[in-house]
Every structure is written in structure tokens, then in C-alpha cells.
Image 1 (spheres, helix red, strand yellow):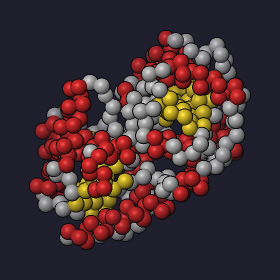
Image 2 (cartoon, one colour):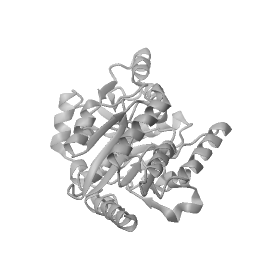
Image 3 (cartoon, helix red, strand yellow):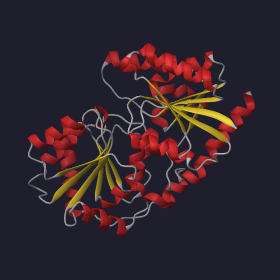
Image 4 (cartoon, one colour):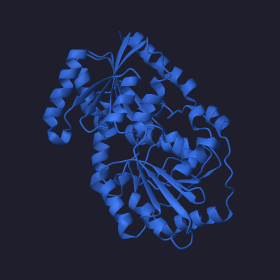
Length: 369
């Protein structure tokens, strides 16, 4: 049995957590002993999901509580467990756990890029560049969720060496179901309202304040509009307060976290994602699979378009977002279409992609051990 550990920053129903769970729910558990090392900011329900999927969870002190405490705890866990494969999902900070893995004799060390940070700040650009170069040193293998995330982390000259692990999905979960739509819309009393949806961590990256401003500009133009926000995070209180200040309490529904996001896509009419930066966001793929029309930030990798139901809009132009939302509800075709065939053809069917990942792990293990 191959002993593998995944490093994540947290377990809070995020995109990275979804990717790991989706894959390992479809990989033969008899071939792998699965571990997760996370920091001590987690959602208990998310931890339970991983435990039910057969993962052994290890929790280290958060870096904010002291980088040396964090490093000592991680080093101690890895020294005791002696993992065969270390797969780190922390993008720019993968390097420090991979260095420890190298010192402890682990021969397969995967640096996985899940994001493509965008900034015009010279110092931040330099910082990102330095960290990406440092990450190349301890890693034996490079993974990315898409083209932009690969170039950002490993450079265009190394693309041939990057294993693109698609953020694959369980097609049966997200396919549109009218009965589930009716039940959830009834639960929230929005049967006769237009519903815009957003799923994402309440953080600067996800740009919630921009979203609220756009909806505020539409308050009189679409009076029966409702916005469903799913997620939690450090900016949750400030976003909720901002909504209150603008008098939009009756427009926004703060759902919180859920272990069944596939149900909420059913209730929506339009999905928006105005992120400041992304790799290839899982929620963007899920929304398209659910048959939703989607408005995404132009900072998102263009490979996110796996259907015709998508537009990439300038993130610096709030009025454009307002116009497109208004136009959609005024003239758009609200019927939901199946994108199952597109998903399979483009490599996002988890039943197929999970076999590729399992084979990669086994081949690399056999090559070096």
C-alpha cells in the first residue's frame, strides 16, 4: 500500500478540498493509505467528510501562531509517518513542506499549483516570482489545475513537465434536476424571484464587495432579485455589514458552508464569479455542469469555458456587469441545458480522470522505490 499525504492550508469546503475529495472517493482505497496535514483553522463538518472518505487527519499549528511551531509539528508528523508521496496543494508555499520531505527521504514530492495570482504591484510580482523559483528546487513533480496556474507557478518553459490535473467532477451530482430546484427555492421562499448565485470563500480574492456594489446598482431595475452567497471566511462579517449598510438585507441570502453545494446550483438562475485572480475554479465548472449561465471575471483562465453558457467580463468595469445581468434577465433564455457530453470530452469526468491520477502515483512509486 502506497502511503500518501496531502498538504492543505485548511479544510473549509474550498475548491482544493473538493478536488482531493472528488478524486479519492473514486480511487481504490486498498491501494493507498491517505493522510491530510492541515493547519488548525478548519470546519468540523469538512474534517468529518475527509474522515468518512478514509483520510487520516493531522493538524499542525497555524503559521500565524509561529512559523517554527508550524514547521516543528509538520516535521514531527512526517518523520513519524515516513510517507512515500507528499502532494502539496498550497501553491506558493509548497516549498517548505517539500524541503522537509526531501530531508526525510521522500522520493516523490509534488508541488501543485491551484491559482494564478494577478497583481500590478512590482514588489508582489517579485515576491511571487521568487517563491515560484524556490518551489522548483524541492519538487520532483509539477502539477497544475490549468494552463494559467501552470505558467504562473512553473513558467512557460516548463509546461511540458507539468501534469495538468483537471478539477474533475461527479457528473451525476451536478446535472440539473427540476425537483431539487423546486424544493430548495421553496425552502428559501424564492419561488417567484430571480436568483443569482455565488459560491466561494469570503476573502479578498473572491471580490464580494464588488459583487455587492453591482447588485446595489440593480436594486430598482430588478426588484424581484435575490442573491445567494455560499461560503464562509475572514471577510464574512464585513460583507454582511456592507450589505446591511446598503439596505440590501432582503436581497442577499447568506447560506454559510454546506457539504452539498450541488443542491444550491439547482436553485439558481445565474452564476457569477468576479474573482480578482483564480486558477481554474471548481465552482465555475460545477455551475456550467448544472446548466447555469455564468458571468466570470476576465482574470480567470479562459479554459474555464466548457460550454457556451459563459461570458468573461472586465473586472474593472462594474457597469458592464450590471448591464449583462440586466440584459440576461430581460432577454436571456432561462432554460437549463445539459453539459454532460462537454464535460466528458474535455476531461472533467471524475470516473475517468481519477484513474489517471492513481496510475500516476503508482508509476512514480514504482520508478523510485
